[in-house]
Every structure is written in C-alpha cells, then in structure tokens.
Length: 498
Image 1: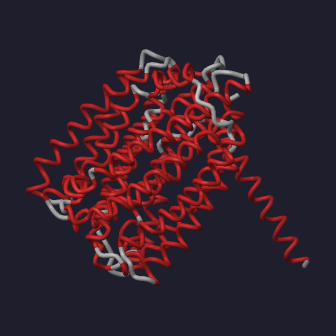
Image 2 (image 1 turned 90 degrees about the horizontal axis):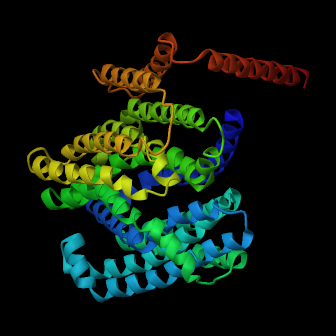
Image 3 (image 1 turned 90 degrees about the vertical axis):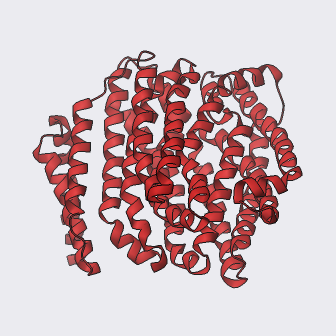
C-alpha cells in the first residue's frame, strides 16, 4: 500500500512541481535582467506589496482553500462535490470584490502604512486590481486540485507564467517602467488566466451559492484564518520590520536571499501539499497501516527537502555570483539561514495531520501564535542593532519553535509512527557538512563549484556510512541502479550499431 501511495503522490507532485519549477527557473533566469533594471528599493517595494496581497487574500479566502478539499473528499456524490466548489467560488468572488472596494477607498492610508508614503497610492491601486485577479485564480485552482485534475491546473499555471514573462519583459525592459512595469505585467497575466479558469470552473461545477454548504465550509475554514494570518506574520513580518528599522533597500537585498530557499520550498513542498492536503492525506487515514504510512512518507519528504536545501546552501556563493547583479551579492549570507529555517517548518505538513482529520483546525493556532510573537519581538530587538541579517537568524528560531509546539498540540489527535532517529541524524549530518564547508570560500568560481559538489557527495556518503538507509531501501536502490546500468548499456550498444 505504501508503494502505491508513494507512486500516486509522486506522480501528482511531479505534475504540480512542473509549474513551480517553470516559475522558479524563469525567476532565476530573469534575475540578471530584473536586478539590472530594478533597484534594491524597487525590489523592496514589490516585496512589501506582494506580502500585503497575501495578507488580504487569506482574509478573503477565509480558509476555504483548505475546506474545499476536506468536504470535496468527504463524499462520493458528484452533485455534492459541485456544491462544495461552486459555493466557495461565488463567495470569494463577491467577498473579494467588497474587500477590494474598501481597500481602494482608503488607498492613501494604505500607502502610508505599507510603503511609508501616501504618494505611493497609485501603486496601491494597481496592487488592488492584481489582488482580485489573484483571488479568482487561486479559488478556481483549488477546485482542480481537490478533483486531482493536476494536468489542467498545470496548463493554467504555465499559461499564466508565460504571459507574465512576456508582459513583464515588455513593461520593464522595453518601456523601462520599473515597479509599475512589474505590476502591469502581473495584472495582465493574472487577469487573462482568471477569466478563462473561472469560466472552466463554472462549466464544471456551476455557480450556485448553497447557504447550508457555505456554513459548513466557513465553520471549518474560519478557525484557519488566525492560523493563516499568524503564519504570514511568522513568514513575512520581517520584511515590514526591516523597512521600518532599516530601509526599503535592505528589504530588497534580504528578499533576494530569501527568494532562493522559498523557490525550493514552492517547488517541492507546495507541489507535494497540493496532492497531500488536497486528497492523499485523507485517503491514507482510511487504510489500516496509516500510522506507518504517515511516518515513512514524512521521513522521505523531509529527507529529500533537507538534501535540496543543503545543496542550495552549499552552492549559494556560486549561485549568487552567477545569477545576481553584484550589488546584491551580500544576499548569499541569507540563503543558508533561511534554508535551515524552512527545513524546520517542513514538519508542519505532518504534525498538523490530526487537526485536519479530526476537524480541529483551531489547534494549529496554538503553534502559530507564539512563533509569530517570537518573530516580531525578536526582529524588533535585533534589527536596530544587527541589521537585516538578524531577520534570517530570527527565522530559524521562529520555525523551530513553531514545529516544536505544533507537534505537542496535535500529537494526540492521530497516531503516527515518526522515524525520529533517522530524521535527527539527517539534520545533524547536514548541519555539520555545511558548517565545515563554510570555513573557506574560493574566489575562483570553478574551485568554489567543485568544493560545493564535493560536500554534497560527502553528505550522501556520511548518511550511507552511518546506516541511515534501511535494508529494504538499500535493495530498492540497488535494483534501480541495476536498471539504470542495464538501460545505459543497451543505449550504448544501439549507438555503436548506428
């Protein structure tokens, strides 16, 4: 059963990750362009506006992005499934319109609070338009995720990405509009996709508001609003505090370093969570060996994610030298610290299982509240003295505290056989490997790359040497290796004959 579950998870995760991979690849490849045409202050403004929209989106969505999959997978009745999606969609369309209208009415105040100057109200107005388009895309996309229509979802996200790249390059590079250009490009791409994906959603599920269904959805979702809001504070309050205690330029520098670990986070964990929280987590709960499956899947996901973040950290100096304009080079110091923090946060997807299965979503607030407080107070104390680097160190403490408390607040809700020893071993070897690698940095780019490759191989060798892999996993790896060798030999023979 575990192999079947992992195969299903891997298949859908791979499809979802293609969207994130394309987005991340485009973001990385376009960094040399954007960092040339945008200043550090421009990046700071865009970062603050982006996270402002995240805050407003979670208030409008009201936890429905989690409620839709829960109730969609609670029934086998197709009409009931349609009622779930259509009710949530029309609620967000109407409520979102109201919130955007209210935001426009106080644009002067928002500009002063968010960006520090009321003269930025034109940027706020454009950001409100972008917000509504993003809301429509998100709520319509959740319907496809719940139904496991991963290919359709991928098609829409790739279309949005391509349109965004074309529009942004035109407005930023050709017309040289800076921040305005980025906003124009994002509004164009999101609006076009919003129109089509919403039409598709309406054709599939209709557009009817069922009051009784809305009550159930909101009862499940509303307790997640404080958690989501506190989560945003935990993740993003540092940008606003850096703007206050340091400068928008420092926000831009910090955001470049923060971008890389979160690209990996989106590529791996967010793609995984689409199918995990969208369906698989609930399907496993009905199986007799669910405790074992949850624990083993947690080990594999955490291991893969930690390896990816460690590799990013080891190559951080080379990556920043190659991809980012030299005025942003200091951002490389942020990458390893944020990478460690998000590795601690990755446990959320498993420690919170019980709260969703038992419909006790309020329990995640018990972890978010202290973590958010630590993030705010820590940054308020440390930023004035140590600058933006303090925010990166604070993120590690924040994420560790969050996962630690979440484990104890939800552990009694569902039984999961975590492989604690294996996970602790991974973190210990990973941290030791990075600390040793950071003792020396080569000025020569090629030597730095070779050094990083050597430490990646060292990490893999150490986890093998210390017996991290089980006997069954070793057999599977040997089997896969033999298949690769056999196919390679067959291919070489075909090439020689040709």
